[in-house]
Amino acid sequence: MPVMDTDQMMNLLYLSLMAAAVAGWFFMQNRQSLGKTAQHAAVWGLIFVGAVAAAGMWGDIQRQVMPRQSFMDGQTIRIPRALDGHYYLTVMVNGTPVDFVVDTGASQVVLTQEDAARVGIDLSSLRYLGSANTANGAVDTASVRLNSVEIGSIRDSDVRAVVNGGQMDGSLLGMTYLGLYSKIEISGGEMILTR
Image 1 (cartoon, rainbow, N blue to C red):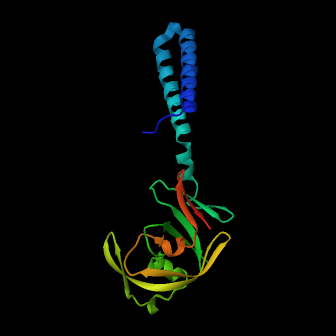
Image 2 (image 1 turned 45 degrees about the vertical axis):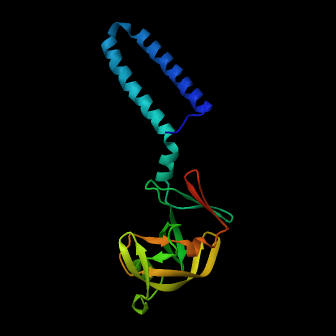
Image 3 (image 1 turned 180 degrees about the horizontal axis):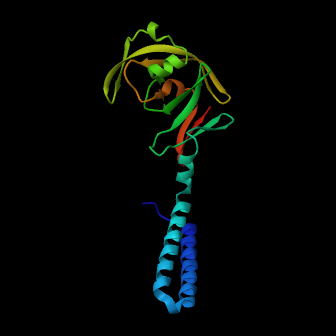
């Protein structure tokens, strides 16, 4: 469980004192009808607790409400962590947007057959000579070269990738692409890629 710093503790103390002052005033004003006052106090207490909880979780809520996409800053890409703990990135492959899971554990860029067809790869000409071990067992793979891979102003040509011969939930952006960056770090709920 995270430890509160001094500022957070002071904010909590301030909010508690403010709530106590408002509650005290409210009860003093309504001494004659304490039953109804207790009902009103309970409703306002729940509203207050809900507002405090929403304020405390705003960063997480904001990351989940915003689109699963990166933020560009020159040669730096910031990718917010999704609620499921993964990092998602939409990349232009051969001029077509493809949604990827950014996977530092994958040695290669891995395309689903559907995504490969969308970016112009002729599936009937592929030769599945390679194999990869996945959580669901070994699958056959076919080596391909991607003419262009673009994220914002960052563009790479002739990127090695494979097409998965089995079923996948989505394409993986692995180390054959991520290795083109000088630095990969995870900090503050973001994956940061720097050229």
